[in-house]
Image (cartoon, rainbow over all chains, first blue to last red; front, side, top):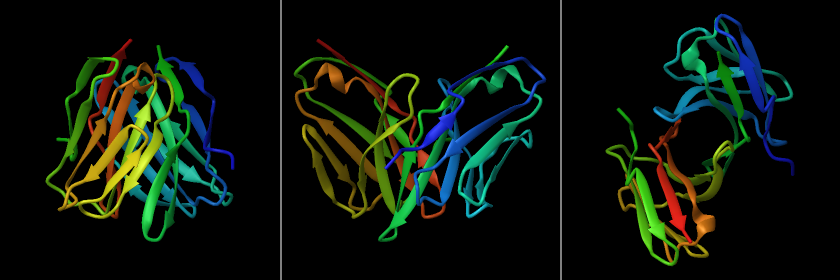
Length: 114
Length: 109
């Protein structure tokens, strides 16, 4: 089974621009979560989508948004980029089995904002 | 404030030494996962523990879930350079995953 894929792997943008990142979950996984990882803050939860609906949201400003499509693929968008948005953005898909949910991560998208 | 605190934050040891990483919280988790992450890559799942007091072994790695399901530990026996990486614990409250602060391990040959 193919793992979680994320595109693009690397991205350079300038302040004020917007960016869209894509995530394809493992086949059969209906839940997709997004995280931001920085050296100072560690892994911070952005949001989770399940069956095209946002199920959970972290404490990030409205500039960060996401959506999920009927095939479970997900995108996240960051508008009006700031220097502090430079980070590794990770997508995780998850599956519940015997009431235990397990997350599997993609390789991440490294975003650099100049 | 982090829901999960990991200690130590950094660890540098010689090849062949043993080490233990701790993951502590005041919250109860329905399950807890450990991941290892290498620079520029996504975290790779090592293990999931579910039952209080559960112990799981993965070659030289031993994982334990606390009896009250609030804490966990990872013990590595005879560490090797290939064990180098960032170790992350993640607890599931049933509603959301919360990640620990991470332990950066360097094993020197």
